[in-house]
Length: 102
Image (tube, rainbow, N blue to C red; front, top):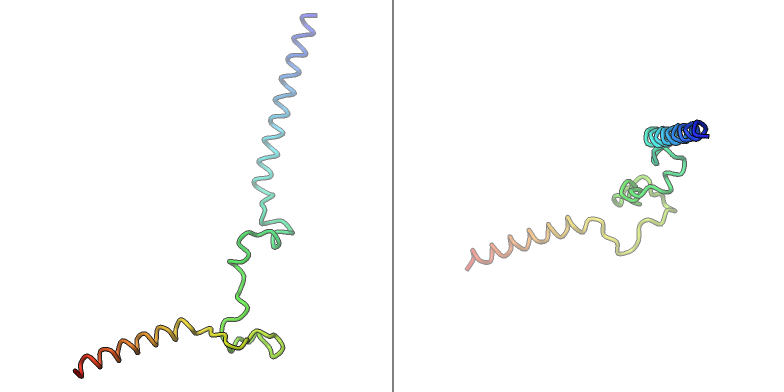
């Protein structure tokens, strides 16, 4: 009976070791070959998809926007930052001219 107990303990240890090695090999395989970005559905689940996506249009003359695309709306100003910088520079120059006249 003691011999049988020793054999079962030895077999249990071997089985635990084999299971541990199998789990380690599975985890290593998953980390090397099953990355999330390699999956078929990654385009739907990509957390950075909005950062990588192109804007609807870049300027008023964007060739991707045809006549029926409804991408140009009334009152929309894509050049607002450049226009504001130009207006600020113009206002600064006018102010300097007024100071120099007096």
